[in-house]
Amino acid sequence: MQSGSSRSYTAEGVTALRAVGARERDPKLRNPDHLAEQFLTWPLRTRVRWAPLRVASVAVIERLLPGLYRFVTARTKHIDSVLVDELGSGAVRQLFILGAGADSRPYRFRERLDGVRVFELDHPATSAWKQQQTRKLFGQLPAHVRYVPINFDSQPLATALDEAGADRNTPSLFIWEGVTPYLTEQAVTATLREISRFATGSSVLFDYFYHDAIHDPTRHVDAPKFHSYLGRRGEPLTFGIEPDQMAAYLATHGLTLASHAYPADLADRHLGGAHQVLPFSAIVHARTAG
Image (cartoon, rainbow, N blue to C red):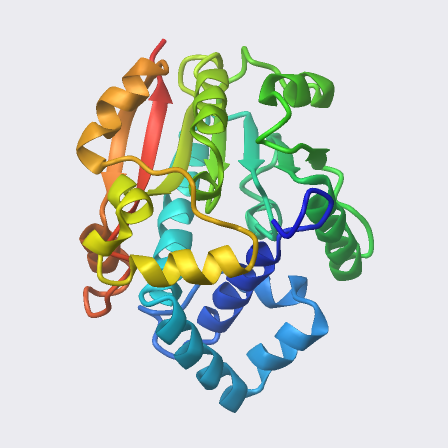
């Protein structure tokens, strides 16, 4: 976040990576987010559409943030697959996207979301930008989506959910993608505790950075590059947890670990195993313990 009143430019940057990935010729490496390009402002959209700029952009991002480009594709595929499974069970009646950015799932999965209430929660400035881009794309805001402004570091999630009309007695799925590394530990804890209050069958998907990659980055070859790049842009890394502590950490906050996708798992399952992704970031799916 550039400042307390500005939108997150990291959100648009990651959207650009999804848009570039959606143009990959190899289906094993292709990002499924075919709408990502439509949410970009024109400078980034030009970079995505013109092949020489697209190739150069990937080369630059790989030099600055090694493994991020492929990780974003693997993360998109992984979260998509869990979302489809959860919706297929028929139990999920509410979908919450925390720190929504330019997430296109409410629109890409519109048919599967029939009868499901969708809430996009994000910083007010980022939410306003997202709504502007959505209106440009569809002509109006989709009726099945509610946009909820919130600053996760300073506003209680419970209050935002109450004001949005969320029903804690309804099984729900929370998608929390690309957010936790930028929050305080208190904000992460408060969010997980609030999610644990939802009905049995509810769950949350989130990715996270390993604790050492944030607090002792020299232990990971490329971690210092992430610190330097994101710090210069006013979005420093702040929260992390070690993988072997995740199950206990979730249990402390009323959640049980359903699945834990490590870097090698993500590469094998979603990229054919041939490409490296971030070696210090994983994805968790956790359920309410009740």
